[in-house]
Image (cartoon, rainbow, N blue to C red; front, top):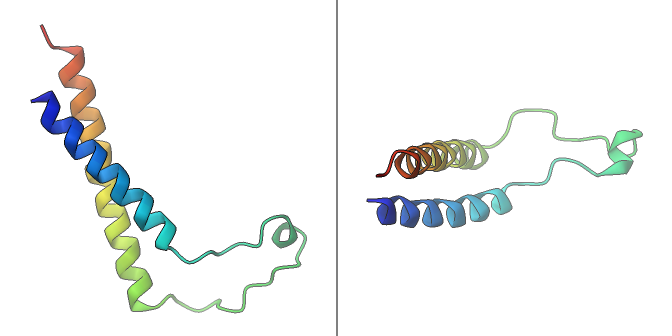
Length: 78
């Protein structure tokens, strides 16, 4: 059973890395902190970005639940 959760954890971790890297950058680093990087897209995000956000949150919830389940399974294993 713990092998199944480990496989799910590895798969969701790789998918999370991919999804986070697909997100559009929003900040300019240190220049943004001092007003150098004023964002021109103050409006809402596009449909694709919203769907990507939803997918990222969904995979994140699955990843978090898998971490908790694997931790509990290994903690109470006899």
